[in-house]
Length: 448
Image (cartoon, rainbow, N blue to C red):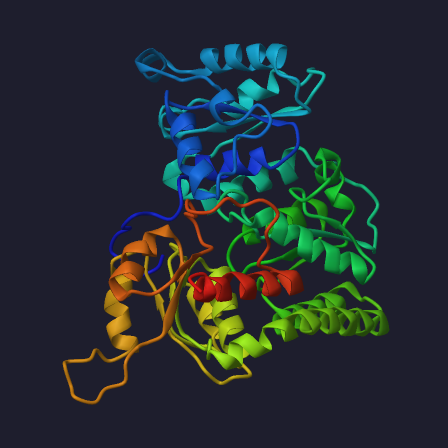
């Protein structure tokens, strides 16, 4: 794991939470929580606000079905209680898929949830179980656990492969407040170069997209970290190879993404280049609008970026290569397996601007200010000194105190995002680059 000694103000929740909010994003998929009383409510309270007020969805949030195990079940076992809860939930809730997910206590006492779920094999709707104990990871791991279980036990096996179909993973619902807009934008672009896209959580998609995911010829993971384990299970069970590409933000990264995806998908190169030309022309037509205000009042800024493994590299590069800003510090705040760190460090190389931030990996929120002293030598009351100003901070609400101390604007885009309402906004792709530019520059002109 990454070298941090502790987690200060965690930017994620437990594996059960990751599984629950992944299920929340699947239409008419009903979780049945087998866990201690209060687990579901606490996770909903944290994720709802942290994800830009995501809401509980259909039969979710405070309406989640839960066994709410207490001392009796901990002592004597909770399988009987789970059996009762599944039967009751099937009677009361209209769902198309029921998934038992677990908390720490029931896993520690050894309840066999898969065996209990298998007792409902004759049910009119599928009932499966996916163990998601928190001692096996955080919410990102819960996303991988849940999808891995669905690929094994729910997705139809043996369907004929379609060369024009691709699965898209790597944007974690609830953990990424902008997951739906991001998936919609990347799906739109892949469709433009001739492919059907299963995002599973995007606009207009149903469980049918998930159930027929084995038709895909390739899985694209929009991350260097999240979704890789689920993609590996999908390859093992359904024979679908996968590639990992970073989440693209802005024109340069998105055009690179489309070319790389096109090679893997064996797409027609002429079509791909035509689409890129059209998208870039549209993108820069909008971008031209801000050229006058940018130059007239000098909107170039230094920047600090604190975020997860998807956003921190992509946003830092966007700032340097497309906005012409000067990112001086990028802090990746995830708990990471050691082999992932060199991959992410590589994302901070080869930029067109040749302008790179100091890159740190740390879960400790309070460490960001300490790293800033490394990235920019403090002014010790010298008569002549370069000041770290003007500056913008891009991170989460946990960076609010630091922004206030430095007297600089803050744009939140990494979990938790409690100071914004998020609907269909995206920071991915061409549209995401335009949206990020507008949001950043709005923070600079808001007081005019």
